[in-house]
Length: 380
Image 1 (cartoon, one colour):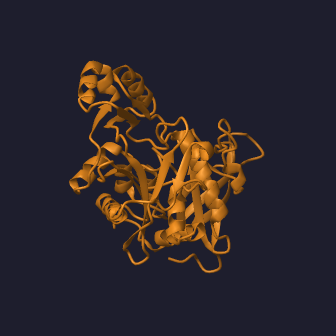
Image 2 (cartoon, rainbow, N blue to C red):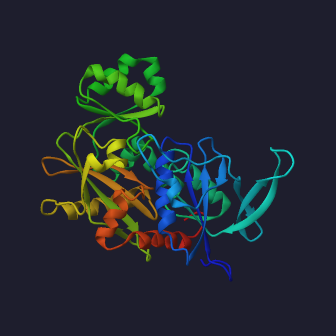
């Protein structure tokens, strides 16, 4: 697909959102806005505020960056509102401005054609198939996986079901809902403790390690469960992969419809962080060490890359994904999770892995937009 004659391809970069990963989405957007080829693409930055309002956001990448532990970026919901709307010749982006009269009145300012959307949303209401459904209904092309693959990958409990059915190994776990916990906490404790300590407790549909806790013994379990339930009424209690190395592998569709995998990379946690939590991910100067590419025993890289491609295919992903693994002390590999919209911050592993494989940041962004533009809308 090409843009209408006389103008560049118009890309709507959508970020922010209503999930707890709002700030990380903004940081990701800042990186993409800085890297995207402005000679090839006409970029329209669209922010989704934490209350769900869509606005025309700043195109300044520096506005969307973390400047300290307590200074996280966010979308300004008071900016000019925007909305996707069908037009006679495709999908339009309607931009409104306040009138000179009533402050609550709005007047149509412009309708811009949109050729492709780059959704840089993490977590629920963005990475879980909901906004992908909106794009499908609007008949507009977009970067990344469709409704089902996005939803399955976002929900760690269902993701495990799909991966197990495809013959891929996952860590043993139990799913717990807020209703079950409220109705019979003792029964829930008995069920999850049968897995054996230590246990990781995490929101089933969260990311960026928000709401995750490690329960080493029974007196830590209740607080971990209640902390995770504060972020999601459905949580996962999972056996801790003790002594495991955390290795990641990137997956991309190729332009001919095949699947490519990146060199794997390893995250090593340092200091007082016992696992890869929020601070270690996004404020990592003293918390993590990254090996890109990872130094692995003979044969592990080949197995991992094959498993990453198999996971991508099993879930039905499109465009891109990051597959996270545990390399256990006995040399076996376990799929930890699959992320259909991995971070694109300067510190994110996905772009670093592809750079090490030979695809630099700007070329990676261009590849994803090209894939989205050549993909048909509707059922595939």
